[in-house]
Amino acid sequence: MALERIFASGLRLLALLPFWLTGHLGPTVATVILAVMPLMGALAYLGLFRRFADPAEDVTGHASYRALFGYGMRIWVGSISGILLSRLDQTLMTPLTGSYQLGLYVIAVTVSELPLIINGSVRDVTFARDASESADDRLAAAARISFFLCSAFAAGIAATMWWWIPRLFGAGFEPSVQVALILLVAVALGTPGSIGGAGLSARGRPGLRSLSLVVACAVNVVLLIVLVPPLGATGAALATLVGNLLSSNLNLVLLQRYFGVPVRLFYGLRRSDVRMLRNLLTSVLRRGR
Image 1: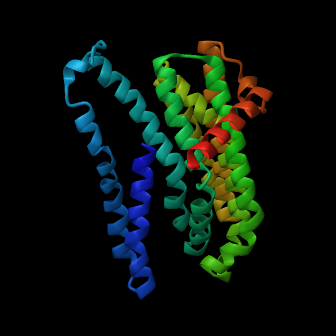
Image 2 (image 1 turned 90 degrees about the horizontal axis):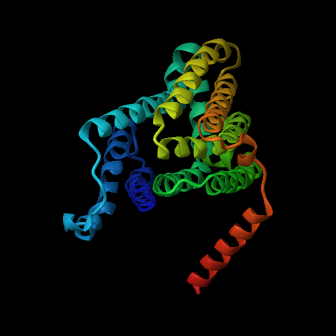
């Protein structure tokens, strides 16, 4: 999955760059490239067809179509709510506050989503591991480490973006720096609950994760309507911050209620986490030699 994302993002960049350098990058060209390149990411899975060509190798039990459909529907509700939570604000901003504020907000969103690369990778691996064998300590450790890494990445962006955002996007977009700062906080604080939500889905309760996202999406819409007209892009960022905090912590509360995993385990950094990070870094450096 990580290879798919890297492949799709790399192709998108390679496709956009020539048009940008020659001055031919317009809305139509950008839309076509952004729509097609994610489909090209499927090429990363071609090797799996050879690896799993023999179905006789799969000796595990098979779920019924009814069970698969029910699980998929519960996942689907959360996925739609998550998309609305992260993208509905951009749709509503133009009628609520105007295109300039939307432009500021889009830049801020693009910048603030960079740390999600780390969280997305950890979440996907955690989902697979926890579905195979549930382990509360491992789930909480993954959340804490992801929270630390995303926070460190976000802090690095926050410390430097005042310099490179105006130079990269133009002086007119300098106000997006403070908006991006709020969104970076929202992304970092939402990390533990994102891993917790993966744990809920892995343990057969994707509906609980979807419930958190539905509630957060509803609250987010109300806050957008209230905050965006007077505050513009800053109001949308504050609404996103509240929505992320709500969905994240609802996941953790539900995980504690149904599986007995204390919420406090998902915050802070333990000595064992530091050792794990050190061992991981050592392993990566050895491979690079």
